[in-house]
Length: 137
Image (cartoon, helix red, strand yellow):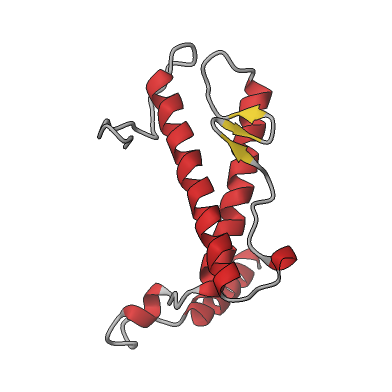
């Protein structure tokens, strides 16, 4: 949603040649990601993290561009758009790691009142691994 309360969808179907609403939505999404990065950086500074270790996205976001590649689909080369998406996903991964490491985030299983209903994450992983091994035999 923009400052005028106009809503833009981040899903398709999208016309490859005329996708201005989708392009606007992706640009607004990048703006949100950039604002999160600024917030995370300021939190690190408040917590006296050395400046060189404060949160910073690996790929610079400026308007509709990630590094030098536009996130917009209209009138853009497929490889440039794909690189912009790749860099955006990498930035999101860094933001996720910062968030998990700097908040009291708890996995869904710890929020459920009865732990007998939901197995621990580790037990799901080990069960999946043994199931996979038995299937491959």
